[in-house]
Length: 225
Image 1 (cartoon, helix red, strand yellow):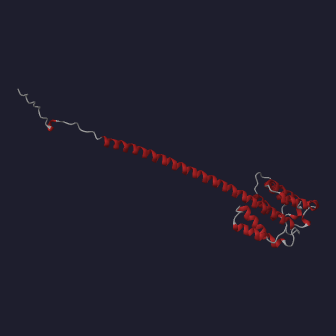
Image 2: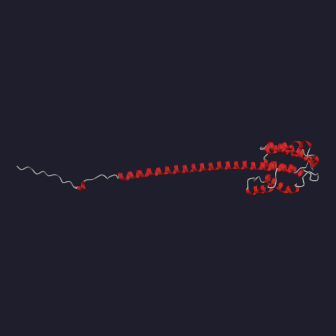
């Protein structure tokens, strides 16, 4: 007996329901995009922080440089003012006659002038100036009491600078009596430029400018101490 033919129920394709495929590829890209976005945000924030820190460092550096430059300028001004004061004091004394000073000063003069040259600090320089004022005769001054009292009090002020000493020297010279054979004959030709130099040193304090140095050199070019 012939074997019975085996009949299988045909499978219809339209009866097979396939599950929806998850687009893992898209999901991976989506996750990557999110990671990249987070990374970029983090990088941007770090970049901004770094830039801000760099700006702060630059500002601090600039502030330090400005502070150093300011300090250097002040030191330079004091050095120039020191020279101006000492040169002016020596020039004034060189044009004071023997009639206007004490006999003691005639003996001390050489040492006193050396003390002026050696004075590298305002506290020392002002003492040399005060000592000189004490050897001026009362007759050689319009107002000797002003010099012994108020002027000396100002000269005793703490923390004097060389530009302040220039002002004190000006005040001393203006008190001297030109009617009492106090000055040499050549002083009249020198006094205007001498005063102008000290006035600018006292008021402006701009001792390092080219214009001021030019005026200083012109005022003292023909003077030897």
